[in-house]
Amino acid sequence: MTFDSVLVATLAAVLLTLAAHVIARVLARKLSWLPMVITALVLVLVFLFVLQWDYDNYYSAAKPVFDHLLGYVTVVLAIPLAAMNFKGLPVKKLILIVAIASAVGALLPMSLAYLFSLNHDTILAFATRSVTTPIGLSVADLIKAPLPMANLIIIVSGLIGGTVARFLFRGIDDDRAKGLALGLAAHAFGTVEAWQISHTAGRYAAFGLAVNGLVTAVWVPIFISAIVSA
Image 1 (tube, rainbow, N blue to C red):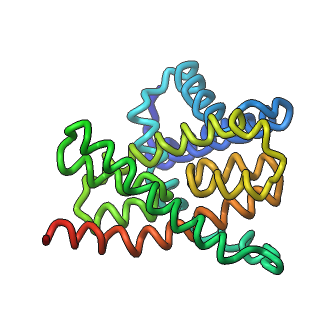
Image 2 (spheres, rainbow, N blue to C red; image 1 turned 90 degrees about the vertical axis):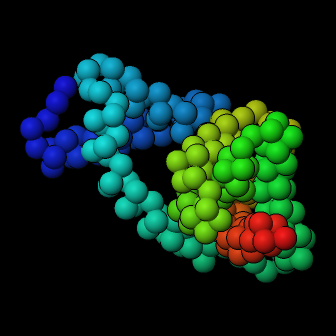
């Protein structure tokens, strides 16, 4: 399937993506074990196959729109944060958890990449693993990591985290812990899954995503710069 107009192609790509998202959301409500992000991804591929629409053409039509919206979505996460009640929360423990998650989320994958003898650029790209795409790409640009590789690492880690989370949470009843873990480990993908659990989980996931992104964006470029210049 091809389109003569760029505008029509863009509109079709957006509508197809939104349809996949809505259907995946409905299915996730009926089947709680079904990861919404993975379902939406599969539905997009099915739609493209049925419509005989080349993926590269779909991607080139949809990418500019969703790239533009992605930054706004990250900022909008401040809304649920504003609705959170921080009274009585163990702030010091939360700060410690976020600090550890930020350090482990960057240093552990970088260390594993180094142990597997991956090249220098790939090791740098793994420093962005634990933050959401807009922040991760900004960090990658600052530390001179390849943007396509950083983008791939962020997306794949988010997909994996959002997919396996529900199976790992079977023995956990605290939605705050679930949400915070999803936001810290699986950033935007995890936050989407957290909102499917409850509003409380969604707010804590947004908190983990935002604060972890801020902390990581500050210390990672400084750390990498210090290592490179040493």
